[in-house]
Figure 1: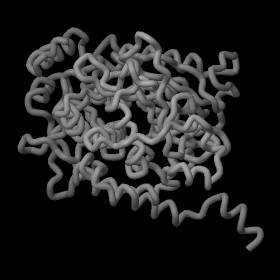
Figure 2 (figure 1 turned 135 degrees about the vertical axis):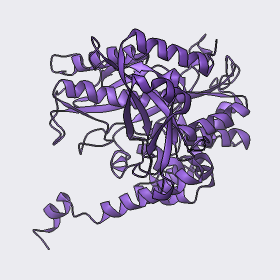
Figure 3 (figure 1 turned 180 degrees about the horizontal axis):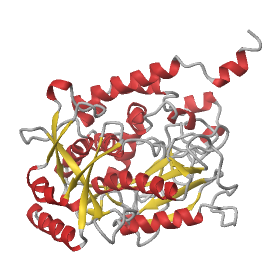
Figure 4 (figure 1 turned 135 degrees about the horizontal axis):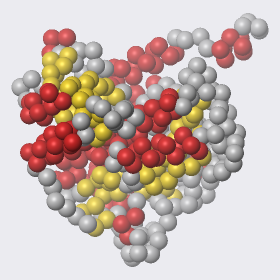
Length: 447
């Protein structure tokens, strides 16, 4: 693989901007909650931005800076230059680039989620690994953002006239591919009006950028057609929520470090230690991979969402699934972590998953036996006897576990760790003091 220098990448961007008559470039970055932030510059500013970055005020960005240290610099990553297909092309096209956030002195800003992921990837690289991920993001289409009226009554993999969203999915896939994002599958999911588009496996930094782009594209195409797309984990009571199953593996050069031809699961020792690390640390990273109050409405038994700390090959009730090995497909050996949801911050979520797995490898954690039976059907006593723990059941439990976690603090760095915990405590307080429709219906007539 030929790696371009930053200089060559900058030249390419300036050339493309000229060729495509680009007038505006949107500079994208994320806050600690994974919300996409953006400001636009004109093409006249592009060369200077690529050289020195563009200054902006970070004081109102969630989790960024205090008022007294609010000056920030967004330095565009030239490798992420893409035209925005939904903007007019004929005259004055619009492009985007993801940015790394710097302090005015030029050093990386430790509150930038993209920098957090780069730091964790460097730790993996120092151990000889490249981290690959393939997340599957589910989402719902609704008539508008004010309610949950579905567009269709379709079910899993349905191909019926009822599936009004087929054209929406098709246009979304074509738009993603136009932006250089490979797509493997797209299909109707289990719940009515629920859909999934799976992006092709790639390195974790590219994929985190791709997840941010994917979420925007899905919403943008929906908006264009007068409907609303949401990645809210559990928008409708009584049906499946939306997950983001994350397929992941470590490579050493061209070799999949998780593969071992002689093992009955075709899993290497590193692969098993990685699973053990994820299982052991799953409860304390859950506030990052499932970061909203609403996330825990999805993480309940009975709706295909995993809540028990177990792993297996075939069983989809488990937290970690190892897809079956197909001869000749050594590089496809991977594990699937099933608890994250699509509304998380992908930079932070990939960081804590990787940190947990690497911890397992470094400390040679022992992997428990796989659980091929349905964990949901076991009694509490049976689960206890077999040492099968559970994920936290609400955001408050999750954040308490995170707050005590040395692993998460190291993975996120002090700045993001403390800002994130503080933010989530505020969210929990705001939620728990609400009086809900459920309480009014249940208690008002009888108390």
